[in-house]
Length: 163
Image (cartoon, rainbow, N blue to C red; front, side):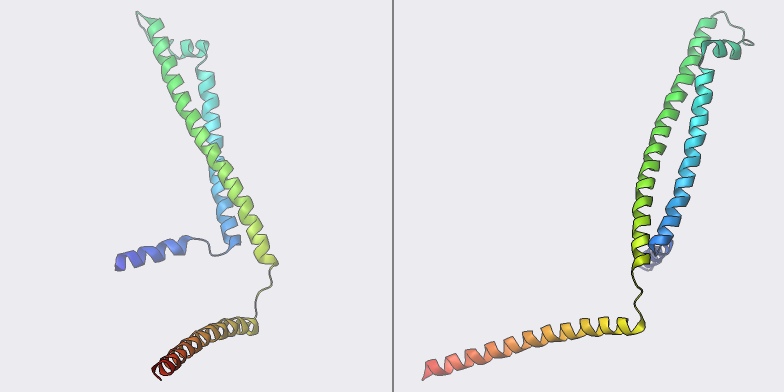
C-alpha cells in the first residue's frame, strides 16, 4: 500500500501543474522528436544513395567471389530491408510529431485562457468557499425540514384516522 502511495506521488510530481508548464514540456518533446526525424531522414538519404547499383558494386569491389551477382543481390536486399525499417520508424516519428504539434496548440490555447483569467484574491476565495458552504447547509437544512414535515404529516394523518 505504501509503495502505491509513493509511486502515485512520484507520477503526479512529474506531471506539469499549469498549462504553461505543459507547453514547455511539449515543446521539449517536440524538439526531441524533430531531432529523431532529422536523423532518420539523413539515414534514409544515405540508404537511398547506397542502394544504387553502382554504389553496391563499389562497396563489393574488394570482395572476391565466384558469384558476384548473388553478393550484389544480397547486399541490395539488406539495404532494402534496412530502408523499409527506417521508413517505418520515420512514419511513426512523423505521426508522433503531428500529435505533439496538435497537443502543443491545444496547451498553448489553454495557457492563454488561464493567463487571461483574473486570479482570485483572498477575499474572493473566502466568498467562494462560504458560498459553497452556505449552499450545502441550505440544501441540508431543506432536506431536514422536509423530513420533519413529512414525519409530522404522517403523525397527524394517523391521529385523525384513529379518531
